[in-house]
Each structure stands twice: as structure tokens, then as C-alpha cells.
Length: 351
Ligand code: XUL
Ligand code: MN
Image (cartoon, rainbow, N blue to C red):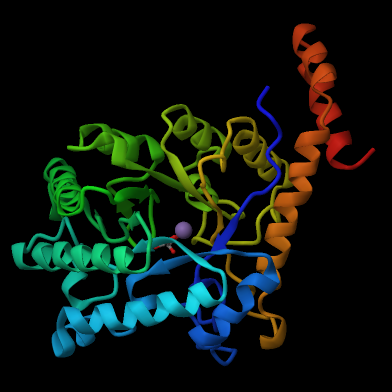
């Protein structure tokens, strides 16, 4: 048994504090500026920031077109100083490849060569930004790499396009790691890389398998009809679980990003259990959250979902650590899984 690990480091992204816009209604809260959000991290118990490239350099394409590479780097330097001053680290940086008019039909898998080229160039700029901010983890959420109707693209070619882009990025920077964040749908009807198994397949097929791994988001696994803790176990076995986005999801609908454990506490317990029992965090991996606050929440208390998700993780960690393994083994040896099932429920209820 490995020595208990006491200190998990937590991260979230600036987009997790938001204005409540949904597809059916506008913002319901005034924005907090990035400067204000940076102030919140430590107080909420977080030390890592998950970034998109344009969280660091707003209006990134316009800024690049007007001020060139130097402008991107000088803005990034300023953010680096700002986060250093708060004792914060950039956990990851991800190119936001899904908002540009050039990625309407996909980014790396767009049918137009010019659009694929844009996606790759923007990703390389993101690598430069990551380096400048002191981060070696590039996240690829392959948002628009999929289809609304199957006949518009070749799924086999699409896999090749994604792999070409990954290889080009690995070649561009020999130290950067790529973390693929799979998701089965939304915004697309069907995504080409829906699960961690698909992501890890790409990793092994890449030019530098040791630098390609995964980031598992609980809700994304649930949307794929899968058990998040088993998805995590799969990646942990391959030593490719390099980040997580813990949250929760109430069945098969839009990506809800609910507070961790708020739908299914036992499913959350099993995620904490698989992470803790397989040494997650010991090599500097962060416990990342990707949670949305409810639209109903007043602005001055619109960070509670972050506080509660982190606390739920720590509460469940306590449950994992105080679970009587001897009793568990006795139930398993007797093949009394009914007994074990009830024992777990009693433990979670504190009885
Ligand atoms: C989308 C999602 C993204 C990624 C980062 O569902 O989870 O926010 O985590 O690009
Ligand atoms: Mn996510």
C-alpha cells in the first residue's frame, strides 16, 4: 500500500465563474473581470488555473493580426507576473478552436485545407503562450472534430487529420505534453474522439506516445454512457491520466457541469477512490474541476459551486481513507457483494 498522500492541488478555469448565459437566455449576472477572478483562487482553496489561450490573450486572433507574435507574448508575460504574484500556477493551456468563423466545419478535421491550417497555426501559438506562462500541458478538447451528419466527412481521414495535428505540435515543441479531453457530443452530434480509449489510441499512434495522454471529465464520460471511475482506471493503468475535470451530470442531456457529487455521491466516491488508490496527484497532477454555477445564483455568491465541489472531494477522500479494507476483503472473499453494497451505503451515510 502506498503511503497516504495528503496534499491534493486543485484547479479550475476562469470560465467556471460565469454570467449564467444559456442557449435560451442572456446573462443574468455582471461579469467578474479576469483580475477579480485571480483574486478568488487562493481564498477558494485553489492553486492551479486552467487556461484557454484567449483567457490569457483576449481577442487573440485580432491581437495577433494587429500586434503579431510579440503582442501575444507581452500580454502573456503580464499574466504570468500577475499569477506568480498570487502564488498561482498555470496547470494547462488549451487552444479555443471552436469559436472562430474559420472552425465552423471543424478545426483539424475541417474539409477546407485553409481552415485546417488556421487551426494548426493557432495551436502552435497556444504552445508559445503555454511556454511563456511556464506550462508544459496543452489540453485539446476536440470540440468541433465531428459531424452533424455522417456524410459530410470521412471518419477515417478525420482520425488521420487529428493525428497529423498532434504530431505537428509534438514536433513543434519537444517538451510540451498533449492532454486529449474526450467528449462524445455537444457541440457536435457525434465526436470523433468520444472516450479515453479513443484518446489513448491516438497517443500510442503518435510520434511521441510518452508525451500524449488524457484528461477525463466526469460529465463527458457519463454522456458517453460510461462510468467515469472506470474510464479513469483505464487511463491510470496506461499512466496517461494527466488531469481530470471533476463534475456531475444528471443523465443523458446537455453537458451540465454540475457540482461534483451533486447528482450521484457514490459515483463521485468511486472517482476519488480510483484516483487515491492509484497514486493520482503524486507526480504533480491537479484535481481539476469543470463546474458551472446554477443560473439562479446571485452574483456575490456565484463561486459556491467551486467551494462545494472541492469540499465534496475532500469529504469523499476522508470516506475513502476511513473505509475498512479488511471488511471489504471479507465481503469479497465470501462473494457477498450484497453485503458489501450495503456496507458502502452505510459508510457513505456515516452510519
Ligand atoms: C467542454 C469542456 C471544456 C474543456 C476545456 O465541455 O469541458 O471547457 O474542459 O476546453
Ligand atoms: Mn472540461
